[in-house]
Length: 209
Length: 197
Image (cartoon, rainbow over all chains, first blue to last red; front, side):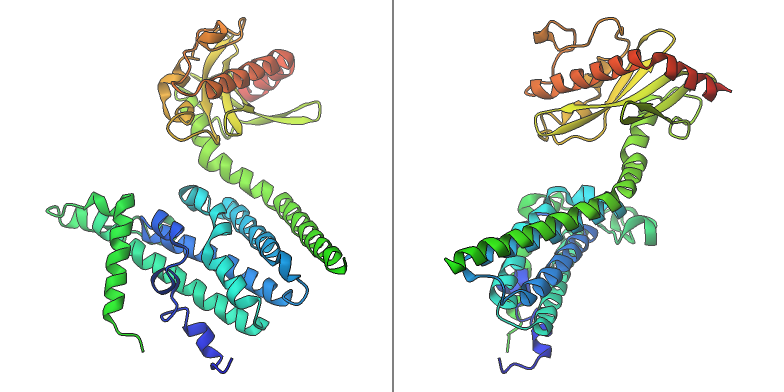
């Protein structure tokens, strides 16, 4: 591990940004990114689980017997997922309702389990925190970006956290430009694949070092 | 052998800590979650059920003790006269617990309507109990004398296509509410009088 420590954080933002570079954890990426708001909400929930499970797995890495490590990781991850689910149910009920089944599904998100297995179980706590934060933020940004593209093209709006901060969508093409017809296709399930593919293509245009 | 024991011990300790922690968290968050459900799900459902009410049924709710259970009852007033009681009830549907609001007209002794609030039924089939108003509409005006049942059970309610178990669960929950109402009638009518004052 000769890498400088800050790279553990920054790699999650570009070099190993989960849905695009690692192409991991695609189930929520395709499922919930029908709007910016949903994407970011899902990303933040995943980041929390990722960070907490990374910390715990890293702390317990010497105690956990290697034969049952996956079972132990799942217990740790599932616990934090239920914490997130209960907290969201109590404080952001509407978002909890829209994300629905995808919150419990964080348990089987390969980004979370992948980081626990590939990184946190082999590295110290400080590196694991940075790794969890970096990958988590990268994941949130990816979901937000994908949600932005899909919502803008599919509905002609950009909604960032409706009520508490803004009244309604901050951009509304349908109202301000009546000639604009939203491509409904983009917010439907197949549109997710197309949007993801296009974003992957654009990212591959930029050469990585 | 030693490794075997270590595996069992580590897994057990992890599970116990996780279970205990989550139990504590649920206890702490339960009241806030109930408040959210009241605002976002039950409140609108009660108001929808009591469309003609001249009062605010959510504000005029009261609690009543029934054995160990505490029941929340919503009151609807028609033309200023409180006469409809909305009871909460539940039954197991196809996918889990199904919660129901049952409106009872205390003057004419009949059902004024039902609404499904939370459920875990199959989307597109059982979920129609909540989403298809024509199913719930069948319960309106049914007498309290006879228990409600779906057609195959010699009743009058036509079940939702592809969701007989869900339809039966709704009937069961409605019947439970009617039974509760009959049992607690004197107490409930007394509370109702208090609201009208």
